[in-house]
Image (cartoon, rainbow over all chains, first blue to last red; front, side):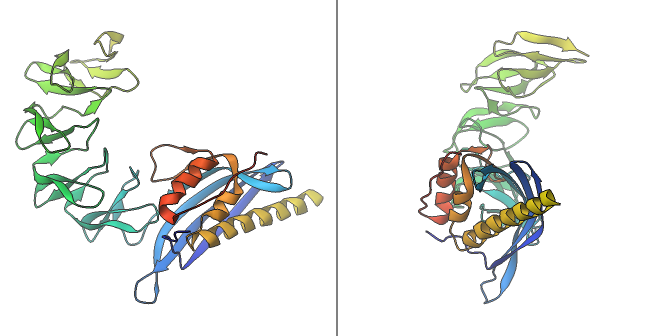
Length: 247
Length: 76
C-alpha cells in the first residue's frame, strides 16, 4: 500500500448498533489524531459515520456508508461541501484547502477563496481575485474585483461595475457588459442582465433568450426560473414558458 | 432474551469489523473497509459531489490516497 494516510490513533465515540433481522445500522463519531510533526499528536479530522450492514451468509457486509465532517479544531470555518477532492478551510483568518484525509493541500495564504470547479478555484489576494490550480499555483493573475467559480469552461469576473466572462487561460472572451444580477453558465446558457432586462446568452455572447425578465436563475434539467416584475415563471431552452408567470 | 443476546453478539461483531477497518485505514491500508464492502456498496463522502456506487468504484476512489489497492467483492 502507498501509506499516504497515517492516523496515530483514533477514538470511536458512542458506537451504536441497531439490528433488525438481516440488517444492522452502525453510527458513531470518530476523532482522528495525527502527528504534530514534533513527536506528539494533534487532533485531526472529526467525523460522523453511518454504515448500513447486511447479513450475507455468515458474514456482515456494508451496503451503504456515509461520512461527513463534524468540526475541526484547527479550522475557523470550512466549506459545507467540498468539490473535486478539496475543501476550503480558514486558518488564522486565511483561506486554504484540505484534502479528504484532512491534510493541508494548499497552504492557508489567501484573503478569501471558493471551491474548485473545472480544476481551478477563485482566490482573493490583496483585494483582487485570481485563480489557482490544485497545486496552489496562481494560473490566472489576481486582477479582478470579483471572480466566481468556473462553470462550463467560463468564469464570471468584473474589474468594475459590469461582469464579463474569462476562459481558463484568463482571456476575457465575453467583454464586461453585464449587470450584477447576471449568473454563471449552465446547460450552455448564462442568465445575464443588460439595460433592457435579463435574458440568456450562449458561450459566444449571443442573446438566445431576449432580455425581458427582471432577473433569472440558472437552467437545471432543461428549465430555468425567471422573474418578471411581480411574478415567477419557468421557461425552457427556447424561452417558451412551461409554467406561466404566477404571483 | 435469546434475541437480545444475538443482537448484542451481532453488534459486537459489527463494531469489531469497523474497528479492524479503522486500524488498517490509519496505517494507509483501505483493505479493512474494502473487505467488508458488499459488491453493490454505495458511499457518500464529503469530498465528492456525487454518490460512489459499487465495490470497484471504491477501490478506484481510495487508490490516490493510499497507493495500490487490490480487493474484490463477492456477491451475496
